[in-house]
Amino acid sequence: MSKPAKSQWDFGELFSPAETRKVLSVWELTADVKRLLEKQIGSVWVSGEITNLRAQSSGHVYFTLKDVAAQLSCVLFRGTAAAQKNLLADGQKVLLQGDVTVYEARGQYQLIVRAVELQGVGALQIQFEKLKQKLAAEGLFAPARKRPLPRYPQRIGLVTSPTGAAIRDVLHVIQRRHPGLEIILAPCRVQGDGAAKEIAKAVELLNGFSVASENPARGDDSTIQPFNDSTKLDLILLTRGGGSLEDLWAFNEEVVARAIFESALPVVSAVGHEIDFTIADFVADVRAATPSAAAEIITEGVFASREFVANAPALLQRAARRGLDSAAENFSQLGARLARLHPRRQLNDSFQRLDDLQTALLRGLKTAARSRGLVFENLAGRFLRAKPALAVKARRETLHQLEKRLNALGPEQVLARGYSITTDVATGKVLRDATKVAAGQQLKTRLAQGQIFSRTEA
Image (cartoon, rainbow, N blue to C red; front, side):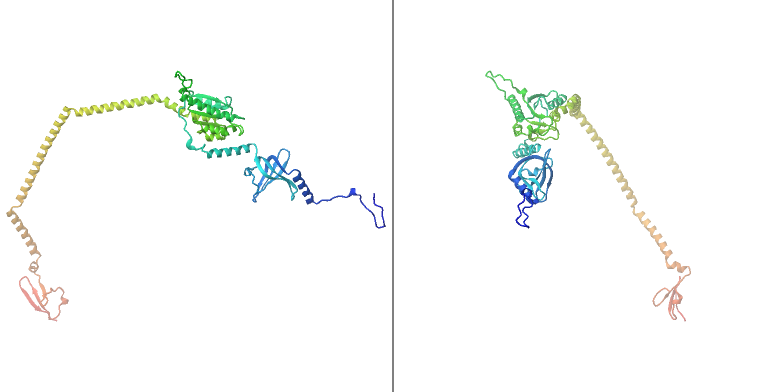
């Protein structure tokens, strides 16, 4: 009810207290919600799957955590020392610890992450990597400690489930490739709680079984007890079929890795499919991609020798034939050598050499005599050609011929035919051109008989 008026200008309360409203700003309301959330909820653990992961250049990481019915915005600030934060990825299942608050700028509530733990396969993968690094640092994976497998194994130990597919695959391959191979089965579980300890125990059991065969126990009467050398093992095959990481996890346990490392027998690991790798694979002496592949590796030596064994008779026949041929040739060579060394053979050879020498001597004497005869004939001919009378006569005849040739070419023969030779008296030079004679020049003309002196006129 309104208050009674005291004056004409006093109207009293126009509205009742019930009708009065408290108006808040957006910021005031958001701040109240933030304080309420931080006070009433505060720090919590929450699980879910990561989606919309976004890493900023500032180093802060933003993502959404969701499940089948709801989602929650999350932020992991750069300065937060949260383990495994580098393993965050879309689709990763995680367990987060953080503070619930409100991001006032957008008016949405979010979780400020303080700690991260991976769940499911991611957690197993982290555990796998940690154990792998630890064992590698201790040298359990070192190539130097890997032992070669025997080429022709006679007896092997098999660690696997007696009801799984792996044992069927292994037996099928061995029956086909090496049916004589003996198998000592150490049955065990290959997955689930306690499976790792059973696997390790089976490896230890087979090693003890093999050692007992090498060092058999003797009773008081010195008789050999049940174990003997016929039970000695050549290697151990550790195998199972494929499955998820959780299914194969027993082979990633440290107890199995230690048992393989301490095994006195070489160990072949064939766990899962070709893409599956376990800690047992890294520690084992040989890793096979599948159980069937492991059986093929173990029987490779015997299987490869089949062709050689099949061809052995023919090879032996050829080898024997080559040996007989070689022996016959050697015998023939020895017979020829003995024949050459016989005294009669040597005497006949001496007679033949004597005849050859005699023939060569006679041939040499005939050749020498023929050569001497030719020399004598040449000397006689030279002596006959060297008579003095004949030489003088030949020389005179040659001189007479030269004289006749000289007279025929001499100036007297020219003058005798009516020619004359005119020369300058002063110089004795023969004149051949009348135009070159000067007036008053004294000349001498030679005829066949006598000379004429004259002087030219102008």
